[in-house]
Length: 268
Image 1: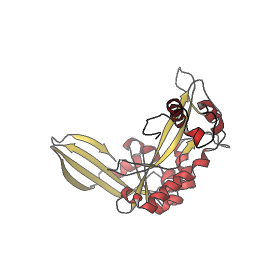
Image 2: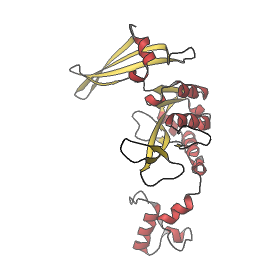
Image 3: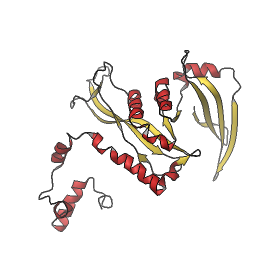
Image 4: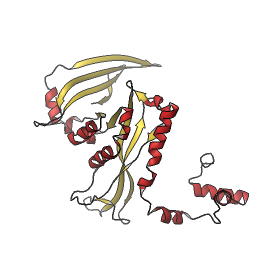
């Protein structure tokens, strides 16, 4: 009922019930004499570690598996795609706490912010997604450098990668994740990866591509009145970085051109 009435929160819905009907679920179901305020709820929840809610994520995935619902997310055969990405959910130049990260911009006051790494089961052509446990990016005890998204990805894989190995996952991420430490962390947990690879940040890969005749596959697609040409190119066993310990990866690119031949999308 909270969602059907479009209430912004459970508490707001309870207030609407009390106003309209003279009583609320808080009173009839939970025996609460007075509906608590938002600030009171925050004060109650603040000391509770987010990890206490984490079992709900694993339970949701297990329920999908039992019901067969996970099949709708299977792609490339038996794989499940897990997208990794960071998001910022607080930023202020005045409000801060011991867990804040900081940034400074020239001529401006220090910014205090909170970010987290989101892990989400996704699938092309599927309107729904399944959120997994997040990993918070915050100052870590015993570390001189400020915490970052790359470290958060590795912590997430260390904590949860083994549990989701049964899904045969392919981890998706932006160029920030296309580095050896993250790729090795994925492989250690038995997963696969498909990360964006910007030419500007992967010079070793670009050097390997120079002068090489790449394998290619072209598809012409018609959707309604629109026609497009999809051109795929790839090269296998390319060193990810310029040293003897470099991980060998498979590079691929995609270009989409419209009917007039203009490239409308390009990625690698």
